[in-house]
Length: 317
Length: 293
Image (cartoon, rainbow over the protein chains, first blue to last red):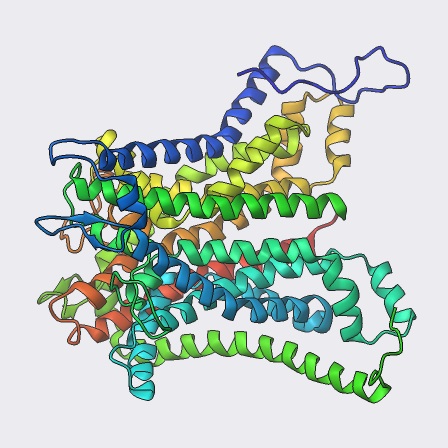
């Protein structure tokens, strides 16, 4: 790979003073080394994609274990019975499981995350902000296995007794803990977006006689809308990809959910629960990679959306 | 802008103002309350299980007695291994992005890669590690496979915080060095990096905490349910606190009997991870306040 093309005008063009001399050979070597480091993340992305799709392919082509599974069955069947003598590999119930907990959790987390972001950026005094912001960061750093554990040991029995349910491990409980994970993400990214609105605009609004909430709702929020949507989408991506919380709390039943109190088996928890128990190279193994590929594509779509929204937002401000 | 609508009286405006600001304040209170209740719950239930023996002994009697020493060691080794993987790549990438790169197609692709890698679900990293490191490279379930997998997972965090730290070093530092005749690399190595390094390392400590708390990426790449072997080779599989908690709480034959062990291990992991994060946050605040530029 060659160095990035230099876009500065040539040395002899008028009015140009070059602070940096042309790089020597050794200097170019150093630069190339750093470029290699920088491409490593992109390279890992591609490697992950290649390995996922390669291993997933084994499900759809015929092999030692008979004819391949049809795409239609994989995407549209609700039956996920990978270990039966006559196995079926439908992913729909698992996808619906993932989407249900993600959706409910984001409905819970968005008002609180944005509210917290508004509080941090526009309501709290500097002293409160100085310790609340790190506190939010700490909330985000609680390991997911601990949240899952609390959901399983404390909230599930409570929910089961109070609401008189067959099980406390269900969509609502999982969504609650996913929301606890997504809220700090939304809050701190949202705070960045809201704080980026220029002080002059805010002052202008106050000078016109607007109250604090009128200023927030009609000036600050509209101006930072794409930044806020980025925050919510990234929170959504985090909830969709979260594994251990749903593995411990969502109940694990591979069925399409009909209510908030049904147990579900999201994609991520299926992967984590079954990958340890399947033989490497078996059809089940390939099916799990196919689920991984579906999950990867879903989260990638959210991330790309967030990336472009964020770029638009940066260009505007 | 604020047209005089029906019912848009001063009194109504003030009432709405109060209601909305109350809700906004409540979100902050709620966030703190949730965090405090999780911490308290684990402290109350976990503290009785913790004593010197719990921290320094191996598990006994199918995990019902004894301690979590091997899990603590495993977690520490895996997290440090992850950092060892992520720091060279992440710092290198940060130096390129902050010091060499000019806006263009290449740089936007690199940024796209970093930000998308950050969004890949942790269990997908686990699958990737299983397929590439464990199977294709033949490292097996081992410290090496787990560290590489976790290292890739925290690579975007390490890169982003290191780049941030480099960007906060004033441009005049570079210009001064170049004006004295330093080459670009000399300026970076002798002026920019020493100034930015504390900030870069602080960001890495936060990433270290994240690596220590992860479960899904190491489930199939590094973690053993139980092993007596000490982590004396990078090809050994190890126990880890996170997988230990998960296994005891869901898979073991004595789920109820090992509850105290579960709470104890959860508290140890929480203290370890939050301790690292708090340490990093305090250092970062100190660095910011003490900065002379």
